[in-house]
Image (cartoon, rainbow, N blue to C red):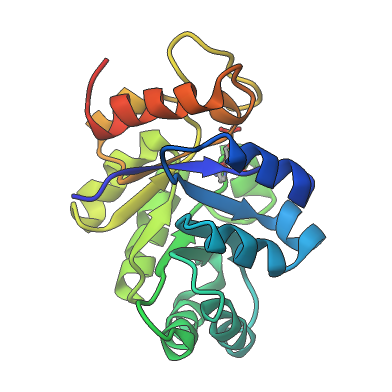
Length: 236
Ligand code: C5P
């Protein structure tokens, strides 16, 4: 099973992002580019980071009518990234179209396509009363994961604590990408449902997405190495 640590590059500018990456001289971490920097700097930031040899998860969470998502994914594929995502709430037709667009647009290997189940910022109450979805968040994560799988997707983004349910529902090979990671001895920030890199390994995540515990660390390279030691190598 492939396992890797993905650093969330939640910086406001290209300069801050590239300065941060300059700290990594001996390794080329897998990185996540989100909406903030993508909308601020455009696709050029993806190319700049790609040129430096990093694997990229482009976290744009697409959600629109199937045809629009298909065409958008065709263009996203041209950026030659390694992982992209959309919202499972867009439904199976949208997910199938997205996969088609991504496959058509990819010159080489198609990026891994994963679905967001329920955002970790959505409470059970908001899901039931505002989004009109009944049942528990766990029920919803399970059924969205199954829907993503039957639509041909490779996996889902979910909280590390939900990765276990997803494995039960979709099997060990269905990819789980989990944010909400904190070291046992560090601040939680605004994350609520969290776990350590080592625990995420035990639960069975394939990829962990780590932002502030690395980006705000006094020594980001050492913090990244600690994540790799715990999550990839299984050492305390
Ligand atoms: O700094 P921190 O480790 O909390 O960053 C986690 C990253 O994962 C951020 O980029 C955040 O947007 C993202 N994320 C999350 N929860 C989700 C989906 C994405 O924390 N459900």
